[in-house]
Length: 170
Length: 373
Image (tube, rainbow over all chains, first blue to last red; front, top):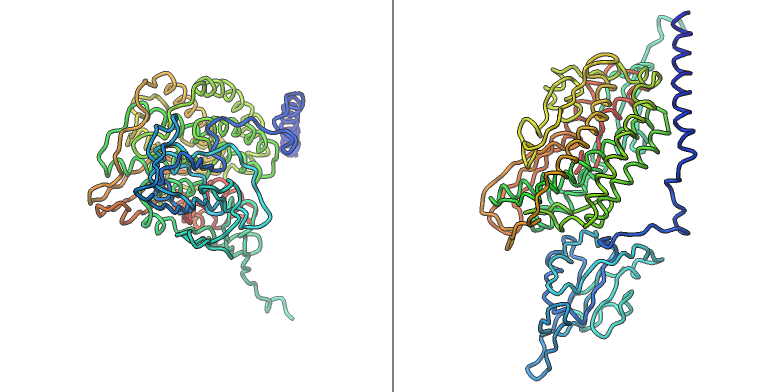
């Protein structure tokens, strides 16, 4: 009988202590944010969606080799001897661009956001933006095109004859 | 029918795969006699992702994101283990600064992993508030990781030969700020959960693992230390810069019940968070300037093999890598601490109540991503 009441007292005591602690927290600043209306400030290193500035790309394909899930598709055609070799921008080290790049596709359904491709890029033209809100209605819209004379965005024309690497489109 | 003709029968109950207390997708087949569990057979493999086979087809650096996904609540520790193994294979020296950054990140990840273990353990037992508080504090660690690596869960930050990028300016202040913020929060957690009589009643003397059983099953980490064995790879087989750091190894002493019960395993985790804070504080003081990554032309080790193990939040994680001199590993085998923990489940659960099985699984702190790989 005595232990019964003692245990009852102990439990009530524990609940009261816990409730007091919890009550204190009620007056603290809220830890949560209302996501779609309030957004967190992201640090500059945030690894979000990939972006390729194709005007600085030299077509070395190091990113496609480094990618562990093979989600980067590049077609690089060597420029002819008569064609002009332009250079990448000042910030990328003024490297010669010896290839035509009609295709530079990234399949974001496969991408695992590991960032290995951005580290190996010699001109830093492939980098990760802080954008994380790019959900779409159909899977094909997650394959993005960054090729020359293409508007960066969801791929418009799949498996054109000049693309050497064919994408799987269900 | 005469009562003497009535037969009793053992009842098979499936717990899982979608059971909330299994921390992932685990199915436990319980053979019960009334409310007493006679056998508990864990069925694993629901989260199998062919890590070892994948690793044979990618270069050494590309394995890193897959290593992250093994124990997804302690990615930094996994990365450290894998990096140490490959460095052993390559025979390269890692800069001192990189080692210190690795230790800081690994210890912070240990805190965040223990916070998750402790919080969800409270949730299993039936208290809700500690879970929210633990996740609130864990969020601050994730913010630090996001600042350093850019990701919040799968960091891929500790690379072969060092770390990916140097510490972000201002992150050291943020880490020490967190240390001062977090110390009183552990005391709060003690009041709310650890020394709560209801919690003690629920966990003390439940799921006792005697030391001989723990040793025979090869349990490691907090599960072994909860049984009273003072064994910590950071102290006993030191790697990285741990010999230069001062910390204690916490063991279960059976304060509330028997040595090796659920409460002991729980309290070892809570006390280890304090030790990790100690390590982080010391490392922040001692961190030298210098390069953050060794210069590597390419990761292509000579033919050979290497095994390295480190102390993960869940125990001893080891990688065994065989190289045939090519760019991809010939074979990678991961030795996971959770797998050994779960193999002891049958022995621990024998003659326990069904309601205690939840408490036992929670106290073992398994992550199914690492059990199945």
